[in-house]
Length: 184
Image (cartoon, rainbow, N blue to C red):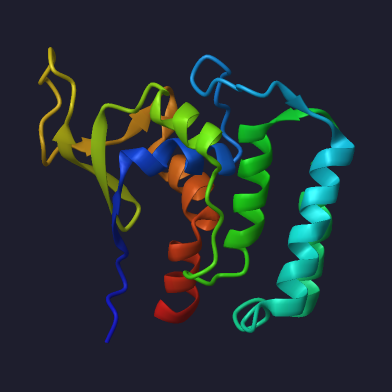
């Protein structure tokens, strides 16, 4: 029997892309765009190709989300592509779209350039555990300040309540969505 409480370790290497996918802002100084700006026609064509490939080949596309829900998701996500955006912003839209499928096996990997940008981005200095609706500190990776210790609860980050952060991140994480759809 699956536990009602979801315990996830948020790997900080994945936190930055997930925050971007969740609609929280990532400044260009945090995730530099080596390619500049992508035009709407480019992102829309890539998005349409992704949708077509999923509809033709994904055997579980409608297993946890109905066709009508996925159609609404595809349309809403595509509407976000009406302005120029960075590669990181487009990656976030695509990641958020795929999370709605609720299949832990379906995801998108950034290209080498974007992986490098994410690897060079400033990272959140705490490794956290999601315990129900709480964020618990597992490790503090700040070398010169150990005020925050393992076991402490993070209640707010940059004036955002932990629950609000989880509301943005978790629904856009395909592994969580997969667990959530079968685990409750």
